Each structure stands twice: as C-alpha cells, then as structure tokens.
Amino acid sequence: MPDARIIPVVLSGGSGTRLWPVSREKHPKQLQPLLGDASLLQDTLQRLDGLPLGAPIVVSNQEYRFITAEQLRLLGLASWTLLLEPVGRNTAPALTAAALYAIRDGADPVLLATPADHHVRDAAAFRAAVLRGLPEAEAGAVVTFGILPDRPETGYGYIETEVGGGDTARGAPMDLLAFREKPDAATARAYVAGGRHFWNSGIFMLRASVWLKAIDHFAPEIPAACRRAVAAARADGDFVRLDADAFAASPADSIDYAVMEKLPAATQLAIPGRMVPLDAGWSDVGAWDALWQAIARDADDNAVKGDVWLEDSHGNLVIAEHGLVACIGCEDMVVVETADAVLIAPKARTQEVKTIVARLKAAGRGEAELQRKVHRPWGWYDSVDSGDRFQVKRIVVRPGATLSLQMHQHRAEHWVVVRGTARVTRGEEVLMLGENQSTYIPLGVKHRLENPGQIPLEIIEVQSGSYLGEDDIVRFDDNYGR
Image 1: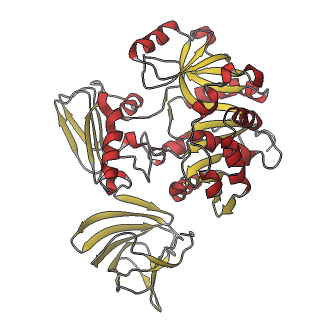
Image 2: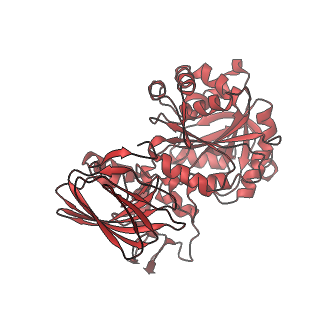
Image 3: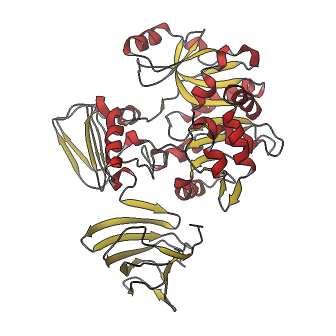
C-alpha cells in the first residue's frame, strides 16, 4: 500500500523463564494473556494500529509456530509473515533474517523492531513517539526509544544522551551518545538524578539496508549465515522456514551487543544514532516484580488476577489461574497458582525464578516446558488427571480442524463427546458422534478425530495402557506436516 512506510518486525522467539509457572519453555510469556484477554504478542501488534504499516514480519521459534499463527489469525490482519527460526540465536540474527526477507523484492523499508513481550500502557503516546522518529529513520538514522525513568532501576540497560529528559525535550529526537550496561544501585541513582540517561527499551527503527550495513561491519558472520538461511528458506503453509543448517551456523548475539553498543563510536560508518524519549507506561515484563509494576493495584498496593482473597496483606502480586487463592498477612510477596504448579517468593527475589526452572529442567520435570493445558495446531488439550495406567484429558478441536491419522502401540482410548459434533475414523469405520455419545479406540487401531461443525468440539478422553507418553504416536497422515 502507498502509505506503508513501516514494516513491523516482532521478535517473538524468547522463552521467558523468569515468569514461570505461567510462562513455560514451549508456551512462553509473549503468548500468554498476562495483562488482559489478549496475549503480549497480540498487544504488541494492536498498539501499532494507526501507524502507516505494511504487513508485519513475526520472527518466532518453530516450537511456537502453531499457536503463534493462531494468535495472528485471531487479530484479523490482512497479511503477515511468520518467519521461523529452527534454533534460537538471539535477536541480532532474528532481525538480520527479517531485514533480508524484507528486501528480497528490491525494497528498502523502515523496520520497527520490537520485542513481542513488552507492555505499553499508553498506546497513543507510543505511536506518537514512533511518528516523531520516523523521518529520522527514513533519512538513514538508527532510532531507538528511551524510556523516561521513574526510579533507579538496576535491571535495565541505559541510553546516554547529551540532552536532559525534562518536559522541553520529551518530544524531540536527540543524539545518542552511548549504551550503558545494567548499573549497580549507586550508578542507577546517579543516572536518574543527572537527567541524561534513559532506560533502553530494546525497540529500534531503521531502514533494512542500514541494519545490514551495520551488522555486516560489526558481526559479519551473522549476516553471512542469515543470507544463506533466507536464500534457502521455504514456504510451508502459514510459515516461512529459514534453512536450519545455515541459520544454526550463525553466532548467537543480541542487537545491543552485536551492533548498538558499538555504533556511537563507529564514526566511519556514518550512521547517526538518534533517541526518541518515550513516556508511555512501558515495562519489559521481565519478571514478576515488573508485572506487579504494570498491573493496576488496589489501595493496599496489591495487584491481583483471578479468584484471590486477601486479609491484612500489602504490596503483593497474587495470580490465581485455576482455583481460589487466599493470603493472610502477606507483605511484598509473589504468589502464582496454575493448574500444575505454584510459585511463592518475595517480590525482591523474583529474578531467581530462572534458577528453579533450570533445576526442574535438569531433573527432567515436564513442568519446566509445558503447562497442563497444551496447545496444538488443531486446538488444545488439558491433562485433567493421571495415575498408574490411566490418563484423562479434556480435548477441544477448532471448527474445521482435523487431528492426524494415527495409531498408538501402548494405549487404548475412550472418547465421550461433551459438546459439538465429531467425525471419527476408527479402522475402516467412519462414525458421526453428537453430544453424550462415545466410542472406543482399541490399542493398535488407526484412528482420526475431526470437527466438521461450526462450533468447537469438546471431548473427554480416557487413556489406558502400559505407557501413556505423548511420543506413543505413529502418524500416517497429518495436515500440519508433523
């Protein structure tokens, strides 16, 4: 479209382990509705509405491809590209692959590179800041967005400018002098008092050619690998799959470390660095204490979500996803309840959640990777109960969706239709089942479940057998290429 001056590049490949147990390795925080009904990924794209946009490029890990595609479909976007990373290589290769993909037809668009897992309370202020920086990016500058700090924060990097952050400077882009690492407490206090340092939002706007020029100069092995990965990429339904071998050969590095921290001193590149101050209620939602900052709080400074009852409690974040949570006499705590795990920690120590996740993963615990509710390309299932030789699942299949034609070597299955209509292939038979009807799938029999109706199909599945793992599936035909 003629007014499409910006291509959003949404970086959606991270795992967000510090927000466990809501965020899991295979269902990370950007795909979770942490602050409302929409996921953080959906919020990221929705806040761009009203800008002169082209079709967004979403860069995601292939592990999340189906739920990411479904969330994009639910937004009703006219078009989008879902670029799949075969392995995680951090944000610099992700942006490089997106830039190469964006210029493949000879164009040189302005890219707005933004993480998928941030929160911005004032979307209108964010859009206004983007428009203030757009002419600078179109003219060849690297534009970043600096957050006006409201406290000395040691968990963020900082951007140093030569102009203070007072009211007179808030609207205008300014020269970027340096990126500063996460400081200690004393340095953070000095930064805030001096007025020339802003939090680094990790949001950048620049032409695709400018990024490629910079990454070619500072980290040439990254674009070399990404050029091969994009050249050999293949379309696969909703997805564009980067070549696995080529992309895996790229060094792993962040946008900041690979380019941005080196750019201000690289005068020979002649790429100006500009910063647009941003005062829009931004949070990176990096840990539970950051989510507490982002959520509206009551008179006792408590932020709650779900069925929560508090008595004589102050300054807490309490989330109840599955049942009632009651707190008495709690001060500055985080309590997060999900269907299969509960986290309790002092708010000041929530950065340490990743240590628990690492220990769970080392012990082979499934709670590190998946929630009890698991998303699939056809819908989702919830493992309601399990024991010796049995497992009960609630399965929901989207209208028109079909599970693979499959067989199990170690388990039989009983299906009861609770809602909707099911078309069941069982061996040579094809059955149509309505509500309150059921069927039995013997061990070793080929079978398939389909939803031919217009409403979600919901069934209860009871598995019985000697082994009930998800890897006991032999697929003969699958619409999703698994």
